[in-house]
Length: 70
Image (cartoon, rainbow, N blue to C red):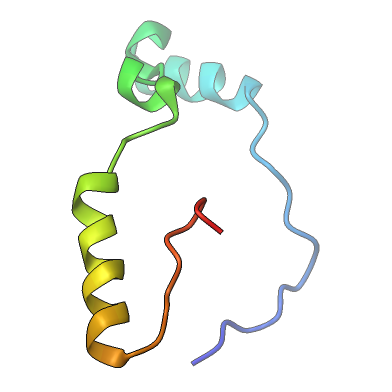
């Protein structure tokens, strides 16, 4: 099933809205920051995903290259 078309172009959230929302809800703005994990932007899942690509390639008989190895 496909998503319906947008009624208007998508707009990224305004970072200033976070401060307005925090004030409205009585939450300290510091509590609404991204965690260090999120800010790092990377979670190494190679040890979990690489074996899946290898097994599927073997079972199906077709090479499925691991993303980044192409």
